[in-house]
Length: 277
Image (cartoon, rainbow, N blue to C red; front, side, top):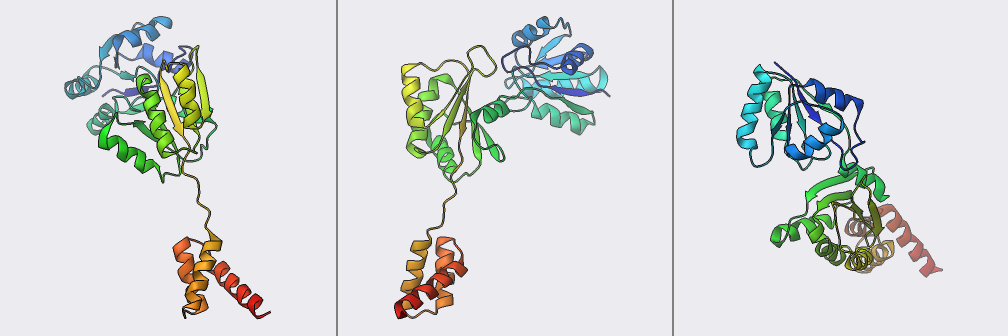
C-alpha cells in the first residue's frame, strides 16, 4: 500500500518551490496533474523526470478509481495542481477522500496559495475570512451570493475571470458602495498588482486599463453596526409614557435595538430626574 502526496505548486513564480517538493516529485512513481504541459514546465525547471498522467474535472470520474488501484498495487503518487494548493478550487478532494477510504496514507507538501497570498496582501482583516470560490457568472445564483455577503462579517476572498472584472466591480459597487475591495492581479508574477479601494474607484482604474491576467478579489466584511442608543432611549420613553413600567420598557427597547437594557434604564431614570428638576 502506497502514499498519496498532495503537492502545492507555484502560483506564478517557479522559484516558489520547497526542497521537499522537489525531492517528493523525484521520488514518487507517478505524478497526477491537471495539465501535463503546465506541470512539464515546472518539472523541466528542476530536472525532474517522473512520468505524468492527466487528472482533471473532465476525467476524474474514471481516473479516480484507476489512481486508487495504482496506489494499492504499484507505487507512491503525487497530486500536483496547475497552481496553488490541491483541492482549493481545483480537482483533488475526491482523490484524497478515496485514498483515505481505501486505507492509503495521505500527506501534504504545503506551499503557495493564491487565496492566502491575496488575503495577506489586501491589508484587510485576516483573523476571520471565508473563501467563496468563483462568483457565479449571472442570474439568480449570482444575486443570491451577493445578497448572502451583505451580512457576512468575515473578509471574503473569491476568484474572478479577467473578462468579468468590470461587471463584478459594478455589482460590488451596487451592493457594497462603502466597503473596501482589494483586486489582486498576477500574484508572484512580473506584473503583480494589488489595488485596494472602493469598487467605484476601481471601476475607473480598470475602465482605463483593460483587466488582464489572473485575478483574486478580497472584499471587506460587513461593518459592525453600532446600536442606536438615542433611538432606543426615545422608544423606551414612549413605552413608559404609554403606561409601561420603566424596567420593562428598557428591556423591550434593548431587545429591539440590540443594546444594553441597563444603559437604557439608567437613561430613563436620568431623564425622569431632569424633568423633575
